[in-house]
Image (cartoon, rainbow, N blue to C red; front, side, top):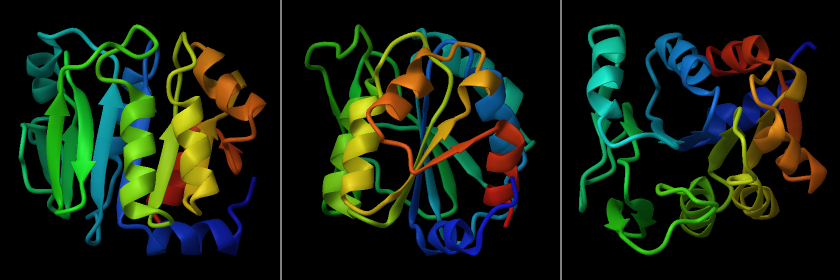
Length: 195
């Protein structure tokens, strides 16, 4: 599929890129983040279902391969442009209107903490139409409702094509409720984000 002018303009206008995924999404998200050009004043937030000790492995894989700063979110961190953040395990990640993160220890959502829905829904409230939300492979429905809220608030929403996902449940759940404005394969997502 050739990317239309409208989707490219929406990507250029966004301030925040949200990427959510679970089982089967890690290698895809890693590939996409490694392929980023300089982020041109965007903030990237990755919400991935993961084990508590997983960050050290992620740091090794990402280390030195990005053209931007990469860090795990801490409570009260200021949100900076040209930075890739990853949500920590065992907390829900919120975005506060003052431009910083807050971490929350409330119950799991879809058996997950961090929950993709929690962060996507919160970002939709704070940034309204200035986000791009992308939902990747996963084995449950976390992220679908959050993606729908982003879309309803005017943000650009994308689901990984189910045929392209290692586990199609998560992106398919978003497609089923019409949360995804676009359904793209990994190569198309990479192409868009490199524009």
